[in-house]
Length: 141
Image (tube, rainbow, N blue to C red; front, side, top):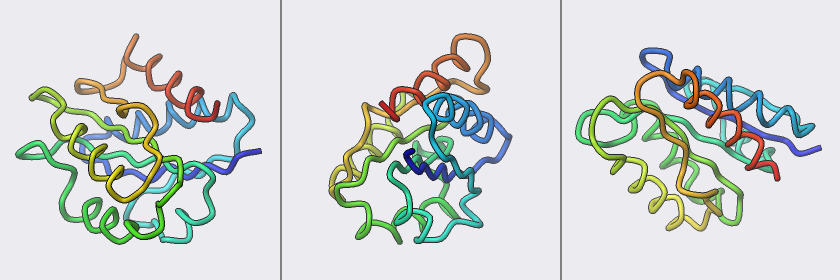
């Protein structure tokens, strides 16, 4: 059974909804899943996980949330080497540049980033919700 930590920041609830959908997909693959708001996350949650998922919406100028998620991501840069990491989040405008930058950043830390992340426009409904569930299934393998 794989241990999965899903650490996320949400403002409007869209990224939290994505986290729950991804968790549902991962649980279908017989995984032990912990959903953790980034404000409650510890480096031990990263160390204990076989698979780490990080979620943040696109903020301002195509960046991850700056007050909680950004410092957390920076704090784990030395412990994600060789760890499978999935990234996800919602956006309202733009073309996904924030996710491309985040993927590149995590790769530079030595993480094994799964695919190119999972993004949805606004709230995950219909096909977008299915995409999140499927992402959770596929990252488990």
